[in-house]
Image 1 (spheres, rainbow, N blue to C red):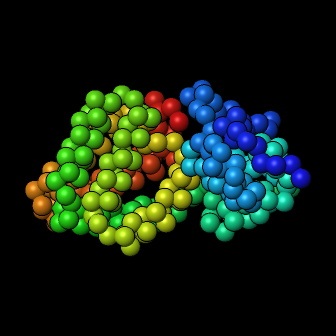
Image 2: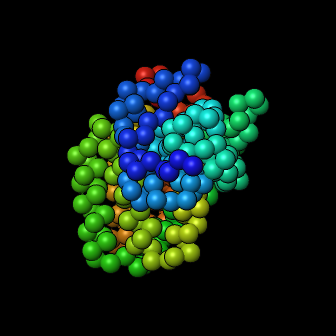
Length: 255
Ligand SMILES: [Zn+2]
């Protein structure tokens, strides 16, 4: 048996001929999974974590085929643990069986995207409400600093997406409710299937900034109703941008 690779950071996905060429920014990005910690995992778990990370990082995109042999070669392990991992990912809704080609990364349809955002709206609204009631002064200060970074990064979609994630995570933590955190984490796998960041849509950086400001102002003012309503509004706006990106032909949008 071949031992797992000692330096998983060197791993690269080898695209098969039918895989759409990734944008340049994506090709340059290093694989997310890496280090001795990942390589020390049991092989099935290692394959699962690697594939999961690749989907979340956008290295494997919705609709893309995932072949056992290719993944086994990528990870330097046999096909059996890769198959096990793919079946676990199928159960989690991240991949689906594809005829003759094993599996493909799941692609959400219009109705599923709407259902996902409906849940996000409720949960993000609740997180903002609870944050208005329970956030510490330090957490509020962190949110305000993140808003400043968001404002400074207005033209950089990737950076905005990263700051956006931190803003939302800070609000989740400031809610101080572990069950809400669990529910939000359960949604995050499906969010990985949405594809490119909505910050690539023209003008989204500015509008999202104004929406975040409203949420944070309401949290700082300890106004739970306003915080919930602003957060729900933010998710509704994101949903509209997302639906346009996924299902319309937006002029000037590079996705
Ligand atoms: Zn946001």
